[in-house]
Image (cartoon, rainbow, N blue to C red; front, side):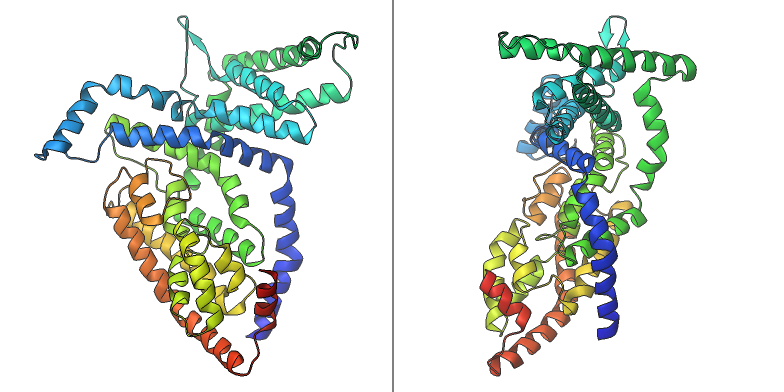
Length: 441
């Protein structure tokens, strides 16, 4: 067993860790991640409005409060939807600006200028004019992949022109603001003369504009991202990277965010239309069923640690319990420790995968409500699960079931580790790894 573990650790350290580190630091991956983080407050507020506008009550309810809420929502729906349209409904605009601004910092460019370039480029290809009106069809989830590509293209084009000094330079006496305005003229022109003709050409040849063409190309990937194998693969990658001490969640969410947001947008449109909600794997599913208390669903383990007979584990449990309620579990991961601890490898990897399987089939069989809202990742899991699914009760119950299964799976490994520590505490010996962690803390 120890030989197998040593081989596994060698593979992680020699193969997976360098590759994951390179991917995590890649400028496009970090820029996309930063772009979504920039847009997150707007999307959370928009999602909250969606839940408020479509209260979780039956139309034939006899409860006075629920009936009044439903009637108010129906009477004022057009006005109530405006904040949603200008936040979640325009997520691609925020994402496009955020990605370009982040990528600009890698090239030492002005983030604001790069963001405006990206915004203009996105409008050129994704906001066609019909009968004097601009279409906003691709301002929501359907335009996410276009926003990402346009942000990268416009910023890289700007960087290329700047690097080769293809710009209008004015004398030093000219005020900085005026000089910058003239400096950006050529990049603006370059974006217009490349993207607009390309969009017209694709429309003439294929009968679709660039966002339509991109969505048709990535449609199989979007569909595949909503399957159980995709969920299990993303969880497996996240857990293995975290076990090696690499922030796997940042890498996985950076890759999955475009798919999650596209699927969430479809779910919200279905909710607004009163249709069946199609997608399962969106960010709320990841946050509230698979990361209960943080990566590895360690909140139940924190409760177990609090009552441990081993002084070290009891102290770590008390330190990590409250942060764990808000999905922050670094005290548990590095204090127990779980990271690089062979005793916890199996439950750390398998617990979220089993929870993912249980939750996936529960939602697929309509036993649990689908996610329709984006919630802050620090929301305590049972509350967040209900909030994300329009405040229905079934997700809260599903989350509690996941917590129970997590606790049951962690328990035998926790007891084995506790016995090991108790034996060493009685001998006045603390494992070297634990001692070093304690000194560091």
